[in-house]
Image (tube, rainbow, N blue to C red; front, side, top):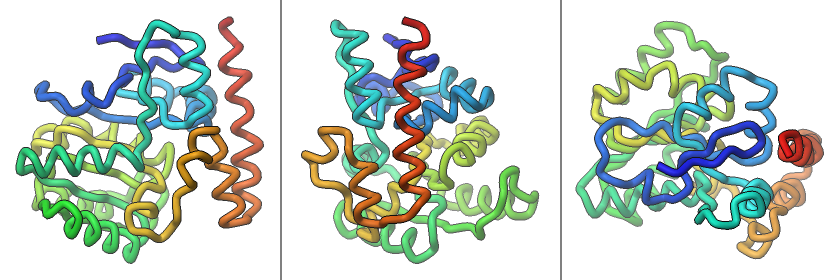
Length: 241
């Protein structure tokens, strides 16, 4: 498998086909935008998880910079909000199941309904009460029991980074035993699937200003901070040059 090193992170998932093939075993997927790459450089445990599993280029800016570094490699931009539909199509083709874990209860329910109506596949979801990580034992047991009852092939975890990545890594072996093929840290993907948040137009996505778009749609200070912090990606990109 081809892998590239970018901003001190090893990216193994360069193509969607590498995540949706029939290889045995569970694939833990981290879709990495600038914000997550920066967090990983400042959080050793998150960096370890990303290096040891399947990390994709999510954000447009990291994707463009990586293609400048690796001109001879075919590197696809794979974001959680696009990849979930690839999994839905694959699940429909193969008669497989999808589970959505996390986000607000109303958003989770609407996302599940939209997928069910659009793809006609077996899909369920669960929105646990908000809690700090590591989760209390009973809280975590409730989550695992809901997944065990449904036994999905694809599991999308929307706890936000890095909480979702820590949780997925801690339960990787258990999920594999249940038959989960792909588990994805999906951040705000459920909001898009549910229609609760409108995604930026494609041309805005293509020029790497999706974060700015989100601020214009929802002008809150934390979004300004996210946009400003994301410029640190250039520091980590240039570090090893």
